[in-house]
Length: 239
Image (cartoon, rainbow, N blue to C red; front, side, top):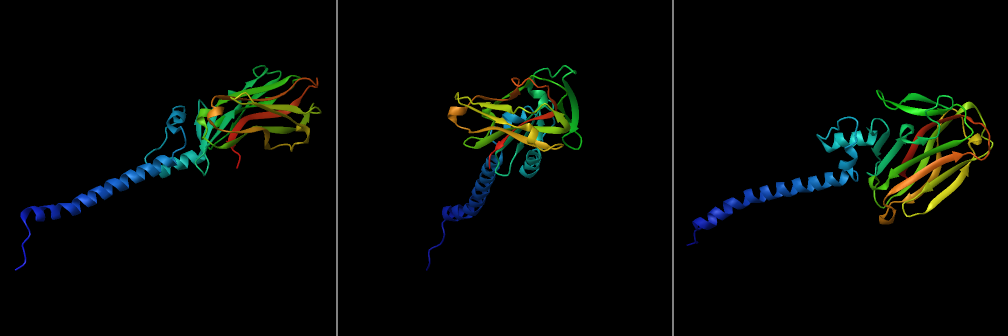
């Protein structure tokens, strides 16, 4: 005669399938949460505190769609977006830059351009100056770690434009004390379209935590200049 199941053994057997299913669901949920967390950009919560409009976080797909398209920050003074490898990118618009004489209408004129279907941002059009000086700063803690970033001014050369016989100076100062400098001839750049004027590049690391400073300037040639429109500075992964 075969031995019969004890009551304890029968009870244990009946509980195991339910327990296994519950544990599997719990593991799957935690795994999904881990994957979603990895898909969020670096320092996401801190960056989104400055968002100009609510962010739809009802699903990771809807959230990513917004982050790929870009989120305006600080009253349309900055823009954040995420590239396809989930790395952080930023645009610092002209209103968040320091432009010498920018509030004097004899020298600079502020225009509004459409950034999205329903949002406009300010750009600065140079009317006439002999002392050109544009500076900005940005905190590297908001950038993805271990990534090679490039920094560039986004500008447009109008037609006509004059006074650009002397190349402008570009400078990038890093938190570790290193600086990068070079010159660019704006007279040779295409007219009537937004172009990037490279400032420099750097890799985010523990040694480069702090503010970077970027500059575009020319005041030694003495020529009066006109026809430059400054949209801002873009900071994005090099590749």
